[in-house]
Picture 1 (cartoon, rainbow over the protein chains, first blue to last red):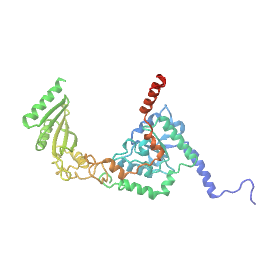
Picture 2 (cartoon, one colour; picture 1 turned 180 degrees about the vertical axis):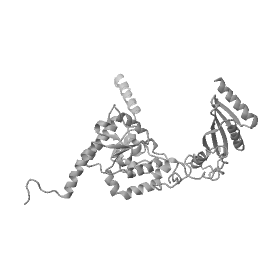
Picture 3 (tube, rainbow over the protein chains, first blue to last red; picture 1 turned 180 degrees about the horizontal axis):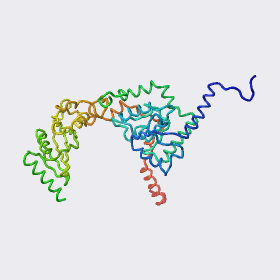
Picture 4 (cartoon, rainbow over the protein chains, first blue to last red; picture 1 turned 30 degrees about the horizontal axis):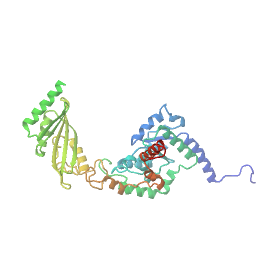
Length: 189
Length: 198
């Protein structure tokens, strides 16, 4: 006999509920991996310490990519650092989110015509939130983090799924700009 | 201060008595520059090393494209007599075959500096076993990037995707300038002051 109060849930619905519960805890305890490539990293100390106190949002620094949830890309990326960023991003456990800081990750910023610096980060790895500015205000940085939490809540932070779905496209862009992602020389053995 | 002036005088005496120096420049009490012929570089560096300038701080290059020359700058340092010395020399700027004998026998640490110079300027260093290997640029596929005739913008355009913006965002430059606005306003106020007459 079918109960009127408790209709049985399908496996899909159960998974969805678990994801919602997971996302609730996840967005309230984001561990960040800071990839301090450029000058925007100087906005992180005031955001982390008593001035803005990121800890009250549940965000904390994490030393290894395997345990981190958010990858902060703070500033310009040369071809060499982009390689390391891709290694790092692929090591992170899912779900993983990326926040791009400053105008350099958006369109190259002041390095838009440099031979060594890439222009568009979301060409190579998916970016969930961009914080614009050169460099962004600390308020803007904090706002970016709360935006990311809202996006996790609304299930719009889907960059890591996009990386899986359109992996060929991302890999092709990486190869077009970098030649080969994993370098083979005397320093990589 | 007295002591460091003595250092500079000592160096001037030491180098100029033994070498045909093209130009000696005393930048300040802690820095000196010698421009020498490219044949004298190795002997001069040997002399400096035996006199105590045992640290090679840097090897750099400059591309003088109009004079068709490369300038090599060896910076050496002494921990007992605190003077940085720049040994400068010019070699022929030849895109394919510019080369200069290595200084590894004198300063072994030059190995990596020479690799860097080869990577960014294309100068060959015969005698250095792996000057041709990559060091900083990884998988570089164009001409050496610090040459003056390298166009970084063209390289960037051909290798990296640019972000496209819709028209309305880039139209800002067509707005009339603030200066013109101010001139119009001043003209109008002048007209009003004169009672509408020009």
